[in-house]
Length: 504
Ligand code: AHR
Image 1 (tube, rainbow, N blue to C red):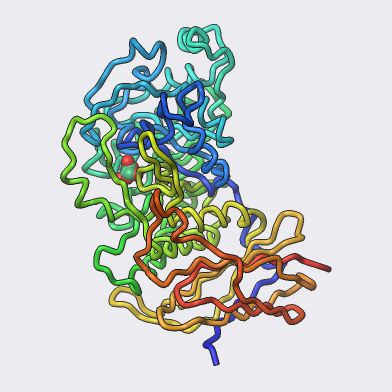
Image 2 (tube, rainbow, N blue to C red):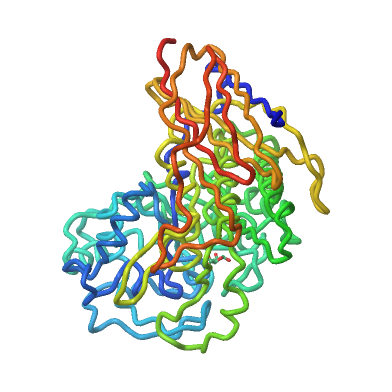
């Protein structure tokens, strides 16, 4: 007899409707994300703007809703004016965050044309490292003001008659990190962010703003940072950012798969901190979370230390993801869905070549890494109403985490209530498990398909030569008996059980 886990879902026990922007991503001027990633004039598949169509196709398939730009650490030393106007007149700069050469061939307007082409909304970060209020207010005048002023007229001169109407803005990046150019204390940053937010809103009152939270949950200033920054900015911002990267440098799979427990705790702690400031301010406003950098990042660390500084678009942060990483990304997505009531934006960091689901070769092809698949499934089938899951699962312990469920799962009801999708990961390394799911108040269901991502080699990767080495199949075993759905989850697997609701 196979071991069992139970999942209870009820149509009336809802967490929230998903904000589709949780299926976002990120393009930074870093390594080969832009140059030879999304932009490669002269490539056989480049369009007349130099945008790689093969890459755009893969991004559209992922249905990425929002894309953050231009950084990341890069933004803290960036002069946005370097990336506008005639390309031949743009300066070449030393880019300090990644110690590369930035030629500014691709800038704000190119990004805006590209992001609209891939069907995503832009999320633009302003530089609060080396710059501040003045550069930010000029930037938003350039992008969002209709015309009749210096910066908006300049945009028109540059060939963009209509304003870009950028709605979502990040007030700097990881300002708590000592590695950040222009790193600040929480007091310094909180004051600057508040005043920048006020000035930006004076230019365009329709925008929404993300203030920087901690760079990760292990920062020594974590929580105090959020409390202080929000005490200065609460009235002027809508979201606080979260960033977290996971890795398996110890090669301890059980512990690696349990790392998302830490992510769950991190989210809960940030929510608690936001609500503490809300209470202290006697405010009616709720601050939402923008988990605008998340992923697995560790494979490329050693290799990156060998990269020659001051190269143009060097191969940096090119993590080659394996099958294990895809499971962790799937687990991460389930955690984000579990907090759909507060996490309104999330960006898988990043999108192309740099810690990315999509890889390219300069002059060559584009292919999907292993982590592409859980992102694709969640983006396709994980939109609607997230149901509050009750899970009863066998558990396991690691050196860091105790009582970790072997099965992690969530259910999402489509907006029209005709379909329900269960996302589930079996963390067990030794045996398949049956997920016995009781659906309440959802009527009769019928199986559409049970998609499974599994592999006999945990370290299996996809390459340009062998792009389908790790890919899902839809031959998963699911049995339905009235309102009970019993799915066999293979050992170490990502599962997507899609059900049609016959009668409510
Ligand atoms: O995504 C890579 C880097 O990670 C970003 O530039 C920075 O914000 C974070 O530390």
